[in-house]
Image (cartoon, rainbow, N blue to C red; front, side, top):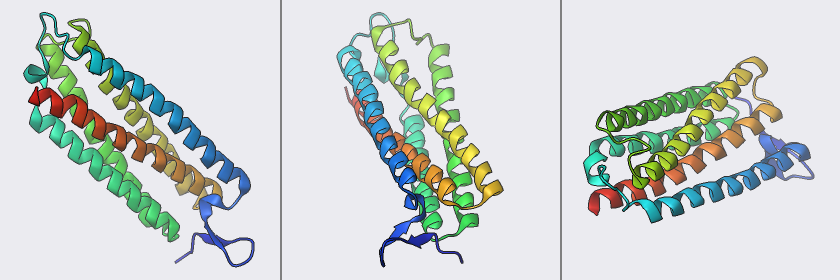
Length: 206
């Protein structure tokens, strides 16, 4: 079993994704990107908090939110965060096959999440709950849809990294890319927890 930790500057060990200074800077830069993306979602949450009671003549949260549906979405996405963490753990142990397997599971769970979300949106639209129906629905579809778009991008991104791992193996570059996409995925899970609590739970309790 290969060890993905390398020696640098004396006896100190660093993860493979931090082997080169350029990789460390790229990871730091991605943390900055996540901070800016957090501001985007904070703005969307603030907008939703102001508009969620403005239902007009359309349905409100109680009429369109399905507890079974959003609970299943939450379980699937949180499980995908766990499997993504297992992929990173396997990477740090130099287990490329296990890492790729857990990434595939994460991707499949992400696809399941998006499928459920699209089904939810289609059901809402079929009942006349569209983006144009009310301020509440505009804010809801924008917030949840933006998160869904991020998840969809993450699925494509992780798939491309998976292909690079299959071709080039576990190198400092592929390790850095895999680590960054894992940060992105965990960030989306954190955002979803807020959506689950602020949008769905408070919606069905109001």
